[in-house]
Each structure stands twice: as structure tokens, then as C-alpha cells.
Amino acid sequence: MSLAAPLRRALLASLTTLAFACNASGDGDGDGDATSLTGTASSSSSSSSADETGEAGSSAEDSSTSSTSSTSGDGDGDGDGDGDTVPVCQNACTTAADCDLGAPAYDADNYACEDGACVYLGCNNDGECSPLMQVCRNVNGFDSCTYACSVPADCDRGGGLAYDADNYACEGGGCVYTGCNNDQECESVGAGYRCWQPGAGTDSYCYPGCSSAADCGTTSPAYDADNYACEGGVCIYTGCNSDAECAQSSAGLVCR
Image 1 (tube, rainbow, N blue to C red):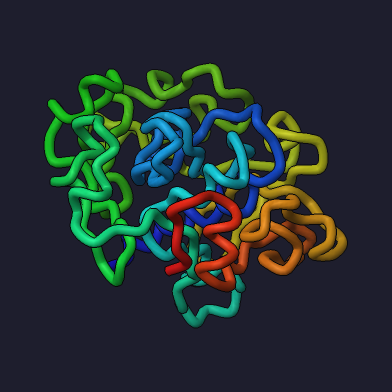
Image 2 (image 1 turned 60 degrees about the horizontal axis):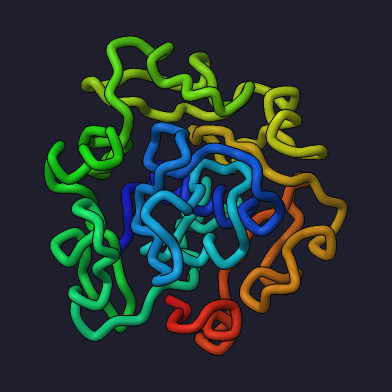
């Protein structure tokens, strides 16, 4: 099961950058804040640890927690327009109960277990999101916990130039991250970060700059150089290569 394309783009934007830094404030639920949308699937991660909007996050291992095969721009992160899914590390499961993270918006009724991996289905109502001080809204075709708003200025949570009022829309009373506007904004995320649009008609996100794939990734097996490509001068996550890579990065993960 895959998410709506705009959300998948945000998810892969996160995968591209999560391996690099620990200082930014987005999560891919469409609101750009630091509260996770897609079920920080790693059992060692809390529901507020993942970063999915295309800027730096908490760790390479945290990026493994996205709950579906992710795509970016053209649908697969390679910019070729084919829309193929990119495999990512996800929690292993036999039933949806194995995916329960113990938070209302991230318990068993928010997941499916598909092909042995946890797939986040979205929030069900505002009540589930209220412990996060958020609301459940349809963000880019996916029901997500996001901050409530009346105007875009309500979405500015102090995350920096790439995450202030001009990077959001307020839709249906919920914050929707609309992307970075320029490289200068992304420099506030990390030195050398660039604002890059992965495909025609897509939002732009902050990515680390590169000259080759060797500039991308970390020492974590599922997030090292052979899991990235350097395209357009930015690091693009091309996916995990095997279950073994994911298990070496964090116990209990599979490549799907």
C-alpha cells in the first residue's frame, strides 16, 4: 500500500536528509513541524521523533521508520517520471498489532501489516491527534496529524526560514507544508543544503548538496553511499537494498 504522491515525496525527502543532521523541525505530515506523521515505525522511536519534510532529522535509523515504500518527485526519487516505489526500512510484523506504538494516532487501528511490514494508514479523528496538540486533517490526500490553523502564520512553529509562514498553506483548518522557496532558506537547515524540486509539478524540499554519492549517507548500512544517488547536485535516497541492511541498521526492520 502506498501513500498519496505528495506525501510520498515528503517521505523520501526526509529519507534523503535524515542521515545528515539532528537540528531541524519537520515531519512529513504536511505541517512541517517536528511531530511524526507516518508512524515512527522503529520500536525504539517515539511518535514525535521522525522528520519527513525534507530537512535534517534525528538519525539515519529514524528515517527507516517511514511506514510505506516511499517516492519522491516522479514517484521513486530518481527523477525519471516512472513512478516506481523506493523500498525503505520498515518495522516487521505478522499482524497490525505488532505495529502499535502505544500512542492513539499510532496504534493498531492506524496500521496494516502488508507483506510482513507495517504500513501506516493515517489518523482516524481529531481525538487521536489531540495528545500531540494537533488535529486530523486530509493533507495531500492522506489523513494526518497536523497543527490546527486559521491562517498560514499559525503554522510557523519556529522551525527556521524553511518552515515559517510562507512555507505553509492553511487548508481545511490544518497546516500543509508547501515546500521551500530558495536555497537561502535551506541554508538555515544545514550548510550546503539546497532547495530542490524533484519533479515537474512537485513541491520543493531542502536536500543536502553533493558532488557524488560518496558525499551522501552515513555509516549505517541502509543509509550509506550505496543507498544514495547524487542528482542535480543533491543527495537522493534510492532505497534499502536488502532486509539484512535494515536489520543491521536497527533490529526488527525489513526492506519493503
